[in-house]
Length: 219
Image 1 (cartoon, rainbow, N blue to C red):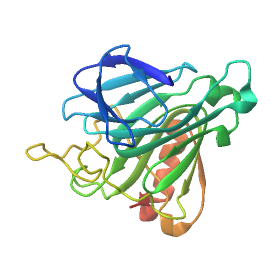
Image 2: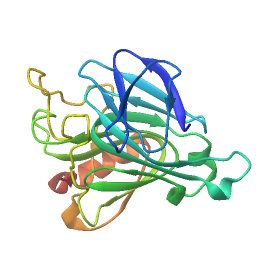
Image 3: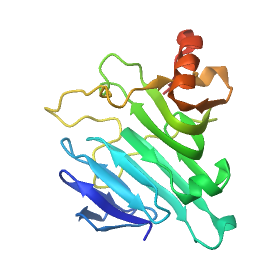
């Protein structure tokens, strides 16, 4: 497998492309192709075989789009994740430290990111999920570097079999803004058609101030 559930505060689902689903427990295997879905009160941490870790907030949908890691073959490294909805924080492992930004990628509905030697957080806001924040992708780089660029074409928000749609908040669940401990740095809008390299939280804050008029990658 690609990794396993390290810590769970509630239900964590793994949904495959055919719609089949598993309820994961601690030490349950996460496979390439799985879409992980946290329930409305679930925080979850997944540890991957390259020692990277990803922590998810409630109401998050995250796909392990591709995963190849061989300790003795760095030239074969290939990690591709998709944050469809919600919020995550990650500390990269061996792939993020030893390989190029092309080998470790994270896509959201509005942005694509190349990652190297990094600890960072990402929040994807869709209408009705982030309070007063505009829809789009928000990034906070804690350490290292994240190269961010708008997607040429927005990722389609196709419903995931066995899960609520990526833009839907379950009935009765209040909209949740990113919490204070996961600050969000706005990124340039897709209309500017330019890439950006973020280094650490201080540099990210300066970038946000400079681009206040064009605050983030919009959906």
